Image 1 (cartoon, helix red, strand yellow):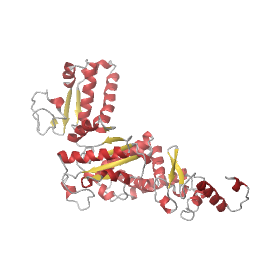
Image 2: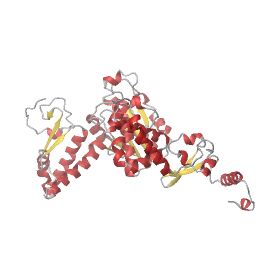
Image 3: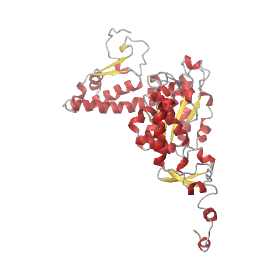
Image 4: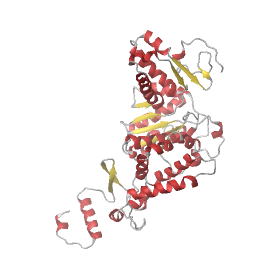
Length: 416
C-alpha cells in the first residue's frame, strides 16, 4: 500500500479494503467501481457489482465466490453462506444432470439428447466458466449434445427453446444500420465469428433464424476443444427470410416471416454485414456455415481475396475428407501417387459434397502434372449421388456453378 497506509494499524477489514481501493483510484491504477477478472491469461476490467455479476454468465461463479470476493464485489448476503469449490459445483451439477435427464424431457416424444441439451443450456446461461469446464472434461459424451446430431433437433425447435439471447442477429430490415449495430456487442475484441443464414442447416433444409443454433454449437466446440476464448467468439444469424412454409405460418416463429431475398438484394445484405464486422474487428476470422450451395460457392469467391473468411462446408469438410482419402490409400499399402487412380463416389450434392469433389480433384490434378489433361483425368474419377440417385447432365435444376465437374459426363439414364 502507500506510506500513509503502512503507518496505521487498522483493526477493521472493511476500512483496509476501502483505503486500498481509494489508493488505487487516486494513483490511477483503476477506475472507481471497476474490478479485475481473468480473460484468458490477461486481466479484464469488470464494470459490474452485486446482482449484476450474478446475472452475467461470463463472470458469475455462484457459490464458488470466496468471502473476500463477496465483500469486494458486494455479493455478501446474495448467495448461500457455504463457499463451494468449482469441483464441488461440478460434482453437484453432474449428479443433478444424471437425475434430471429423464425428468427434463418435454413429454415422451422429447428425446433424451434434447433433454440433456436443455440442462446444459441452462448452465451456459448462468455460469459460462463452469459450462465449459463440464464440456471440456466430458467432451466425448457432450460434443454430440452441443453439436451434431442433437443441434439439428435444437435448430428445428429453437423458437420454442429460446430463453436467453446468445450471439447477434442481422436481418434484411437492418439494412443501413449494421455499421452501428456491431458496436452493440460489448466485446472489444472478437477472434472468430461463425455466421449462417439458416438456408441449409445440416440435412434439414431451410430453418430460417432458428439456424443460429448451429453457429452457437460450433463455437462451443471451438472453445472446449480448441481452447478459444469464449469472450472473443461471436455466433451470428443473418435473417433474410425463409422459404419454409411451415415457419412462415408459425405464429411463434422468431424470424422474419417473409420469403428469402434473392439476387442483388441478398448480396447487399451480406456485403453490408461483412463491411461492418471487419470495420469493428479488423483481425476477426469469419466462418460461413450451412449456406445453401448456390450461395456458399458464390460468397466464398466474392470475399476470399478481400476478407479473412472461409466456408466450413466447402473448405473445412473438404480438408478433413482429403486427409481421410489419402489415409485410405496408405491403409491399402499403396503409394500416394496411386490416389488419382481411385474411383470415388460422393454421397450428397450439397456444398460440403461438392467441396470435397473440388478439393480432391485439385489434389489429383497436382499429382498428375497440374495441366488440363490431368484435370480431365482427375474429374473422371468422381461420381456424385444424392437422394434422387446418380447426378448426370439429364438432371434438371442443377446449379451449374457447383456441378461444373460433371459437364463431361455422358447423358446416362437415371431414375429421377
